[in-house]
Image 1 (cartoon, rainbow, N blue to C red):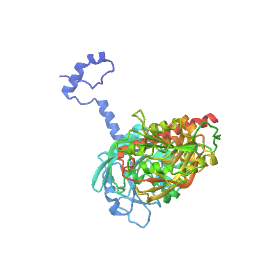
Image 2: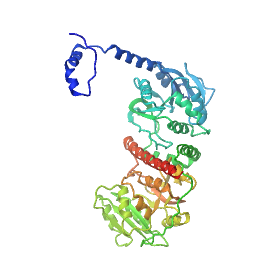
Image 3: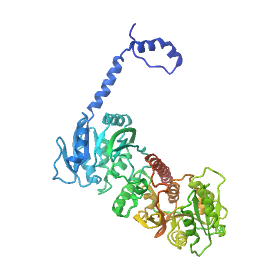
Image 4: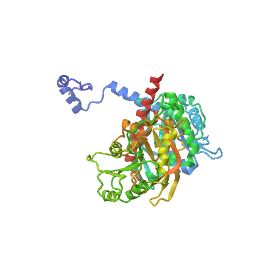
Length: 536
C-alpha cells in the first residue's frame, strides 16, 4: 500500500468524495504526519519552551511557601522566583530571590514586580497559602496568552478547604468589570511587555489600590482573558458563607481602602471617556395627578415568618402626607397570603396577586408602580426587613424635595432575625458623594437601602424583571442624568437570616449574580461614553 501525504477535508462535499480512498488509506496505514506538519508542531513546541516566566510569590517563611516554590521549580519554564516579603530580614528559599514589598497590593509592589519582569511572562500569586499547579498548567496559560494576545490570563481552579476539594470557577472579564473585588483567582499571568508598559501609565502611588490600578490600566489596551479550565489548586481559608462576605466592600473599617479604590476607578473612567461631571438635570416634581404622596412597595413570596413585621412597620409610619402600602404577593403557598389579609381592614393596604406567573422582584415592582393608586414616590421595603422608626417614610420623601433628586437611598443597620445589631453594623454608603457618587457607583456592588424613586421617572425607565440587581440597574440609570439623594441616618433594619436570598449561595449562583451586575455596568458605561461623545 502506498503511503500518501496527509490532507484536510474540503468544505466542498464533491471534493471530499474524490478524496475518500485517500483518507481511508491514511487511517488504515497509520501514516505519520507530513514533514511540514511535524515542522510546524516542532516550532510551536520550541517557541513554548523558549518562553520563560518570572514568578512572584508572597512569602512569610519556609513552611508557608516551600511547596509552592518546589512546584514552580519543577517546570522548565520558570526563569526566576521572587519571594515577596514585608521584612528584609527573613531568609529566602534556595534558588529564590527575596524582594521586599510593604504590601502586596500597593503601587510600589507593582513597580518592583514590573522592573524585575525580564522574562516573557510574569506570574503573580496573591495568596499566602499553598499553590499546586495542574499538569502543564503554565504551558496552557502561555499558549492561551499567545493565541489571544492577552495582557493577562487567569483561570478556573480548585479550592481546598479543610482538606476537601471543590470547583472554583471564575467569570469572564468585560468592559464593565470595574468592581475592585472582581475575582480573578489567585494566579495572574501577565505578558511582561504589557505589564511594563502599563506600569509606566500608573500616575498615583497607592497603599491599597496598586493592583487594582494596574489591572484597570492594563484593560485599557490589552484583553484580560479567562481560561475556563481548571489549572491549579489553592488552599482557601475564608470559610464564611456568601451572605457574610457580600458587605466587605462597605465595611466602615475599610474606609481608607475604599477611598483609594474610588480614586483609582474615577481616574480610569476619565481616561476611557466614561466619567460624568457633577452636573444634573433639575426635577420640578410637577406631577399632580397622584392621590397619594408616597407608596411603600413590598414584593413577597413565602415570607410567613416576616411579612407581618414588614407590614406593621409601614402602617405605623407617622407622616404629614397621605400614603399607602402596595403588597405584591407573588403566589405564596406558605400562609403569607392569609397573613397579609389580616390587615385588609386598613384601607391603606393594597394586596395584589399577579395574574402572571413569570414575575421576579422587578416585575412585581412594575405591577405596583403602574397601579392607579401608586403614589408620587415609590419607596422600597423588602418582605423580611423593617423600617428603623416611624419617621423613616417622612425622611425619605423630604429628601426628594430638599436634594432635588430622582432617587433616594437611606442608611441601614445589619441585624439578626431578632433585630439585634450584627457586624458590620451600620452601613451608610458614605462612598456615595454628591460630587462623585454617580461615577463611584460603577465600582461598588450596591447602592444601599432603602431605596425610593420619583414614580413618573420610574415608570419611564421601568424595573428589570429580575430578582437580583434590579435596584442596582435603576440606580445607575437614574444617576446618569439626575442626582441621587442620601440619608445618613439609620432608617432601615436589614435582617440577616438563613432564608435571605443571598445568605448562602453556591459559587455558580454567585458567579451568575456577579456576571449580571458586570453586564449592567458594561451597558451603563457604554451609554455614558456615548453621552459624553454626543455632548462634545
